[in-house]
Amino acid sequence: MQIDHWMMFSTFAEQRHFEYPEKGTYQGVIINANMAAYAPAGLAAFLLEKTATGTYIIDPLTHAFQHDPEVICNSEGEPKSSIKSIAQAYGDPVLALVGARPLLPKHFKDSKVLRAFTERCVKFQLDYLRSFMKEADAAKYVDDDEIKPPYAVVAPYFFLTETTYAHWLPICIGAAKQTRENLGDGECQKVFAAVVVSQGILLDERAQEAIAGRLSEAAPDGYLLWVDDLDENSASKGELAGLLNLARRLRANGKREVINLHGGYFSIMAAGVLGKSALSGVTHGPEFGEFRPVVPVGGGIPIARYYIPRLHARARYRDALRMFTAKGSLDSAAIFHADICDCGECKDVLTNDAANFTLFGESTVKSVRRKHGIVRIDFPTTEAKRRCLCHYLEKKRIEYQFAATASDTLLLSDLDTGIQAYQDVAGLEGVAHLQRWKETLTA
Amino acid sequence: MRFLADEGYRIRLEVPNMGQSADLVASRSRWLTFVEAKRHDWRRALRQCRAHEAVADYICVAISLRSVSNALLQEAKDVGYGLIRYDLASQTCEWMLQPSRNTKVWLPQRRRLMAAMKVIDYAD
Image (cartoon, rainbow over all chains, first blue to last red; front, side, top):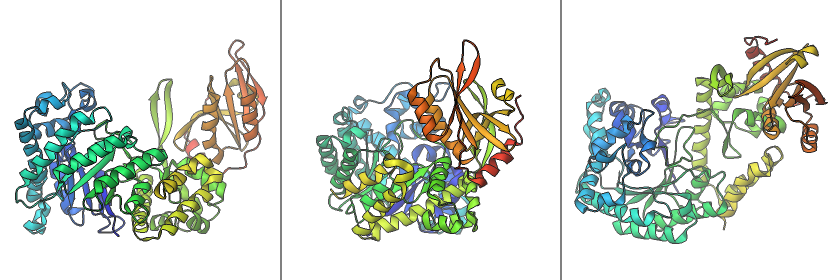
């Protein structure tokens, strides 16, 4: 069994990590359309130079235009330049509305409008970055056929909630069908539909049935799945079961690919042996992005947190330190590597001295203006962030492999081990997510 | 601040510690006492104090309440934190509970804190 490991592009500062811990770790890169429109030359160079396969999917981010315009505007009330760039590429109806009024289903009442909009959206994904890749310096060193189209073209899509899906779904279906027609017999033959839904949809069986059933009429080759701000570590069993159920409906017994755009270890297990391949792939960002709200659109600053392998959760440095000292795991480097982590990065950082764990929390002090005056706050150094990130990426790779190849018994006992190891220091609530994952995946 | 200074402490304000900022750090000899001050929200103060357990010899909550609840007294006592009550009317402080010595200090983190504190001036 294989679980496709995708990584979301976030900032250029992190581009060197798309081949970390080794070449070929990632199936490909998910790129937001606003980023592609805003910095195409940089992204073209990144795909050619910093990824092993140059495989990518562009998320067209068409939902950006349906929200209150405020969420896509800057402090001066103008549309953010990256959003304006995609509006220009997609044309009307979004170009006429961007920053002023939200896009509504009625704006696509005329089928010609949806057809033309979809055509431009598809063209953007197929041609825009590629044209910059062909012009990039690095293009000299690759054959023309290595400058590839996207892995799949994503049909224009809109955010679906329990109360709005009936209005938007017909448009999503029409756009997916139109996308297929637009591909013709070109190089890219895969059409993905995006299922971007509220958490409420996970608890609404009828809505799930309608979304999965009706979208399948458009016969997409796969789906991008994104549940608004679903943190798997705090999600209820009902929500997790809903996610599993929706993924399985979309997957249609393995006939279609389903990639969770923002998923953590629960999704990875769902894609693996224990979840019987409910998903084909899972995406995360470098050190963040295991869950993400639909609004605000784009953005997000990565922060340093230490990933606790047995908890399958990130923790603030101070919380990780409190738990590790309470467990005695920092009494020596050997105990740390046996109890907490023995990845290459942790070994390099500790260099046989547990005191060097402080390097994961290394910080510099900055003065910050707050309500009651200036306060000093320490911010993680760039190096501390890099250390946390490399450790996280090493553990993530292992999680994907483990979930794809280990037996049910081993996977479940790994969750039990986490519960036993941390309940005394994190409390029952601190380990409850492991119990919820276990119960959902074995229900 | 004067209350602690009168007891022989040197005071630093707003001392950063692992992504938080301690309201006050009082030092006397080689001992460090961390104080989180709040007007009302003592539960939040107790939560903030947890991060200081890796570095502080003593930890206290200073609270500006007319009367201190038994729940606060008990919780502070359970975790060994001290409790200082500030009386707004008389503008005076009093010890409601003396802190116990914190035994959870992790020396490597403490050394990092000491190095960082050198650049912070005393406020008294």
